[in-house]
Image (tube, rainbow, N blue to C red):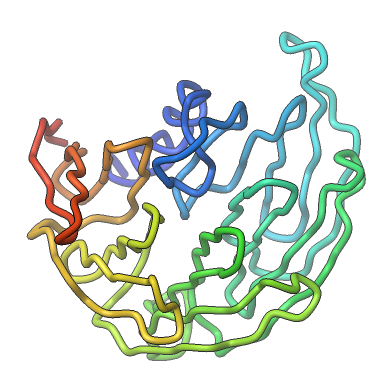
Length: 248
């Protein structure tokens, strides 16, 4: 229970202090929106908080920050698990697929598309052109499938699967420019400059549930604690410097 509680609080901590981080984790222009990990079940977008439960997407107005108001409830389906916000889109992961909703009207999210997959736990992150999904299975999720899937979402109404690769037991993931960090048997780093042909280039010898990348800071939470790394990109690639850890 202690590890589970920490995992629940982890995205909440980042959401509350991440006004200077980009929602996709790239080291670029800061965003005023909140930032959670790929396993988060809520995200901040402007004056609205979006929260998923097992079936629905709940929209809260934060116009009066001390008195949030539930302004809408949108039924998504069954076994909804994760929510990732990027610009004017919400990427929702479930045990049976990924859903993309648009925020043209922030109080009334509109379903733009969905993709179906084998029954498996399904966190997702995205950038301007691609969505990255890990599928893993355990006693709660069903089938024995452990893969990284990459979708072309240049046209968000028609996601196209362009890459699928087997991993050990992938869970949370995060984006940093042309690099994708995936929590597998260790934290694996893929060069995704060509998303259709991702390449494993580095690994951090830590097991983690999820990662959040804020600027050049990588924050990871695992069974044994919370870890922080300084990311050091260069023309030759990327390296990391361990900064601190908080043991559980």
